[in-house]
Structure formats: structure tokens, C-alpha cells
Image 1 (tube, rainbow, N blue to C red):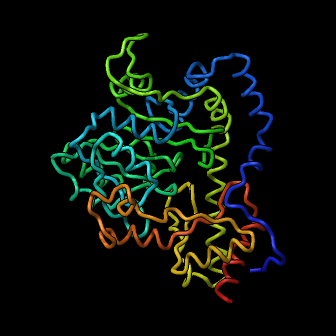
Image 2: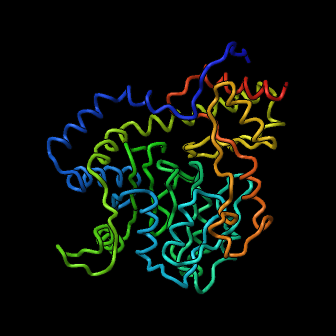
Image 3: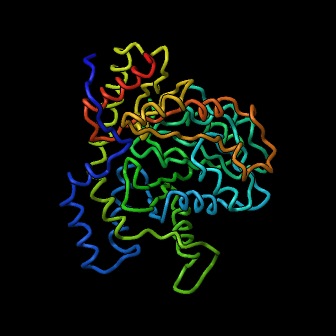
Length: 377
């Protein structure tokens, strides 16, 4: 590998580059919303729901205010309430478990698989009880969870599966099954840093079930079945038209962006191998259909490496430094260090490197050269 000479800046993510390339399209979409002066739900949201539902292979798509609210609403739709349990992985973003607790239910944590860091299906099967209201597998970092086994376990117990696909739009499994189409519902996030990111918070719930789709649309409007007629207590989970307009533009580019992320992952593998670092750095597996929302390496000296990279202009992030079962807000559940060792090891060792679509080969070479320099020091 030809080393890159001289310092340079490689941010973890650079949305300004993406924006400059689609600026004219975005401005036209924003003008369309401003001219219409219809800012909440409306035709832009309806159009996005149709386009994104088709892209994901779902019959129904319900646009909502955030990925977190998508999870919350999905759990409400299956009647989650105090006294219920919901099986969730111990290694994920907080919202996966936080939404369960917000409804007064108990998050039941299970460990994750060592390679994929997705929910361990056998552990999930063991965790299901008569009180279980749902199972929420997460397609972490853009890699599909082992859905066949998870769905088999949930079906045996007659428990619905709600996919947390917040990091996995466009992700497929090895057989070509699409993330977001396996469970009773799936939840997407369009937080600005996602592969498909809005200009603020937004999310979506996907389902093939017409009854659930109607129920979800009622829940996102304060439980309103007709104007000022509230059949149930829902919430203000509506999507803004501006976010929908931006997402409609970006959706057209998403396949190209996901292909670029996969190409960057392949180049990282080549560069790390050429640098002789594979005995020091564990790379994410080259799973079919992976969309690489993150390229998270595993290293024993993670914090020292991160500090070294930061001083040399390489942006990184730790996803996630504290596993969910050890979060202070869940201390009453009685978990301790050692309960879920795979999740805890991931929290100690994982480090996300830059992998946004507009990343250049030159920048990637600099990242790997800098990692190599750390181990030579």
C-alpha cells in the first residue's frame, strides 16, 4: 500500500458534500413545500409513504416524527402496557429499550451474536415468557439480523416481531429478504446521519397488515378517528412535509449511496489486509446485503486508538460505550457486568470509522495509514 503523506482531515461524516451535489433538487423540493404552505402530513408525506413503501417492499408505510416515535407507536399498536415484557438486544441505541420503558413495560435484555452484533436468536427464544408482548431485533450498523430463527421463535410463542430497522434501510439478508419486511412492523429512522437522512427528525413504520396500518395512522394523530373524535389515546407523531420533501429527493439517490458504502467497505478490507493489520483489527464481516450505516472495527485498545486518530484529523465514534443493561436508568432491573458478555465486549471494543458515500479512496488510505502508524508507535 502506498502510504499517504502529510496530515489531512477525514470526518466521520460530511453531509455538506452530499448537499452540494443535490442542492438544486433539495431547493426545488423545499420551494414546493413553501409554495403549498402545507407543513404537516399532506401530499408530500403521502407521496413519500408510497415511494418508500415500494422501495422497501412494504404494503403500507406510515410517516412519523422520528425513529423513536416509530418504535413507540409500533409498541402501542400491539397494546404494550405495564406488566408486559419486550425482548430487546443489550447492544443497541437507547431508543430500542427506552420506548419499552416509556410504556411502563419491562425491557428484557438478551445478548448479541459475536460476529454480527445482532440479537442472538437462541437467547431471544429463551427470554420469551407468557408476559412477552413483542420481540424487537435490531439490524445493527446496516447488517440484517438472523430473522428466520427470530421469527421461528416468536411464532412458536405467538408473539409479534417489530424490526428496529433504523440503521438498515435497503439492507437485505443472504437470501435477498429485505429488512423491514420480516416482522409484523418495522421502524425506520431518518435522523440526518442515517443512510437516508432528513433535515431534522423523522421516521416511518412499515407493515403489510392493513388493520395495523389503520391503527398506526390513528395513533399518530392523538388517537383521532374523525376530527376531534378520539377513540384511543395516541400521540403527536406526525411527519413534517419539509422532511418528506427532502427524503423524496434523497430516496432517488439511496441505491447509489448504499453501493458506495459497500465499495468503501471492500476497499477498507483490502487496505487493512495490505497493511498487515488483520491480527490487530477485527473488521465487520462482509455479509451479503450489508448497507454499512457504520463500519465498526473491533480493537482491544479502542480508546487509545481513537485518541490517536483524533489528533491526526480522523473522525470516529463509539457505538455504544455503555450496553443497555448497564445504563443507570435500568439499574432497577438488577443487571450487572458480566450478564451479557458479548454486548459488553462490543461496547469496550467497537470503533466506527468514516464510511459515508462521498469518502474518497485517498481519505480511506489515510485512515488505514493512521491506524497502522498507531500500532507502529
